[in-house]
Length: 194
Ligand code: 5GP
Image (cartoon, rainbow, N blue to C red; front, side, top):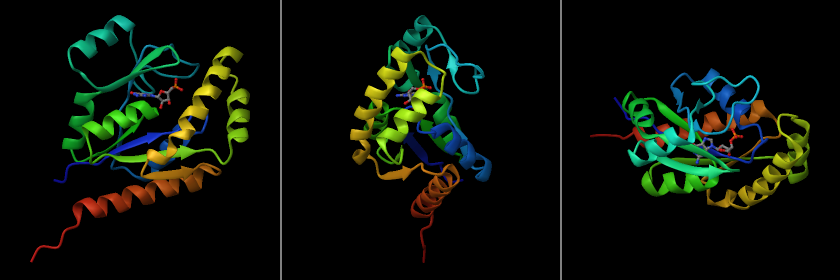
């Protein structure tokens, strides 16, 4: 069995990464999602173990000390990290694993796993993103302001990614992502042997 791909997806808060990844996973059953751990509180509707493993800072620090994190970062005052075992298990089963992580984490993964495929999901314009973030209504204004600043920093790093997908239409963006994964599978797995 072929080992699965590692697909790293980043994009600023509010760009619609969750929607695009959800559509991709509906269409492509070989894709598995690695649920991250975080110390931030769940938003309304978020389920522990589905959207994130919501853990305490004490637990998170212990996971770091015990080398259980493939990468981790502090983002807007909270820890976020990728569980190394989960990723390895899925890839060994032949599943292509999606990590939805911020730019620093993506750079760390690329250093540790050079075969990772990196994709940045961008909004059509910065103004469009600002509108989406303020309209979401899930965070207080100070948090939104912080996330807008962070979004600008992240957009500046989009050129370190192998692919940029513009999310002006979620269906088309998910389709682009599907095409990238198909092409990467072909590149990695199809070899002609005499
Ligand atoms: P949110 O609080 O909006 O769910 O996530 C904030 C940021 O943390 C997003 O950019 C998201 O991609 C990133 N993130 C989520 N999980 C991880 C992770 O495991 N590692 C890293 N480095 N970033 C993560």
